Amino acid sequence: MALFDSKDATDDAASALRATGHSVEVLEGEDGRRRLEPEGDEEGFFASLKSAFEAALGDEDRILDKVDRELALDGSFVVVESSEEDAADIAGILKEHGGHYLWHFDKWTYVSLGGGAER
Image (cartoon, rainbow, N blue to C red; front, side, top):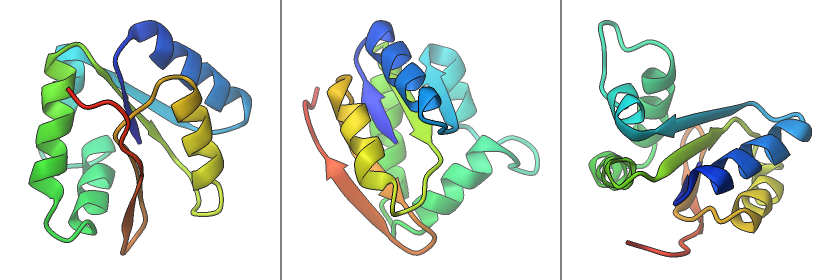
């Protein structure tokens, strides 16, 4: 996953990733912030994100707070489904298009793939 500062950069990264066959989810603005909130039985995007964050050994609040702050500042949050083997290639595409605060979440681990610019 990665954060982006502009809609154009987000769209370019999402298009490049989709062109290589990756499944991409884009969260933007208030709608994106609402998607971070659990609803009902916590299915779908939030459930998978929460599972990934729980694997982050307690960093869930810190990471979700960062994502929420960026979305509130009109940033975009891009989530890409990947295997560990694809993570480096995906990170390269995300960085090439201006992605920062990159993370790869696996079932039991999480790895920063590059910090980039911080607000």
